[in-house]
Length: 393
Image (cartoon, rainbow, N blue to C red):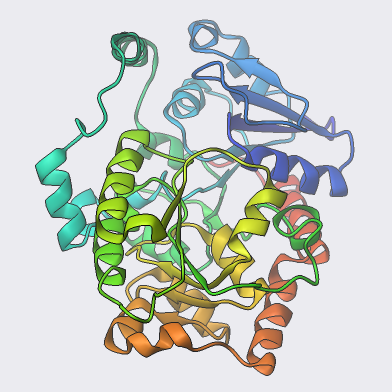
């Protein structure tokens, strides 16, 4: 301890580059990243890191390494890192940066309650067999599951009780998690976000605005996007949707589900349905979504905040479900944002747009929260809080 260094426990995800940029802005050369690699894909492009595999869990070195740092940032409660954290007996300052998937099972123990009628019915009909895969994939999945059962301690409650601080994606989610958490203790609240507007989310796109009238639906191949419900509704909005594409990002997430959404969308909407199947660069993605004047996020839970930020900046009309905590967060801060329920009650909103004053208000609010200065300030505050903390009892 006292060496001024910070350890980051991470997984092989693109968001880690965002974290590296922000922490290096504030503490250059002080950050070490251990990245758990479940496969051979590599989504981390900028961050110097040490790769960690299942076999590393069998020894004591990981636990010993963790104890040498002033504090440890846990980038989502992945089962591998949960197991490592639970094995460490030494008292350590941990900062848990939640991603949503790692705490929404606490808020919603029954995943089906996040699915709307058509999406739930489709899941019951097709299940996980919608896109047959090669036998090799099944074998790897079986082997991976067997290894996890052998070497991982899945007790997330125990790991959470070791955390000193917790930063959910949105501040209003902290109370939702804390009041439903079943453990005896819960970490303190701290606020931090991945990626600034200038350095990550809108790099090279500042000053741009929407250029078309297409409609963007969802953010990933996740059934909590409730694609079947919103695409089914959109397919009936003729002639409002005449000459407009429905763009649907499906490159990230469950590819079996992505195939089912693709089949459903093409059947319901024909050539106007435009699924994004392949990963593209951020600049290419921004060029695609800037053709969209409306964003429809049919999630009952917080998800796809990056997409929401991007589309608000570009000047699109953004619609979130009323029960989504993200809607209450953005609305409570004064953003010009609407609900999916409002849109479904008044489909004419598909032909409406924000005026220049409303667009500028959204941009000003975004910079107050996600500018480089704002993110650097949050990073400095997180570091100061962690460095001044005493280890949990």
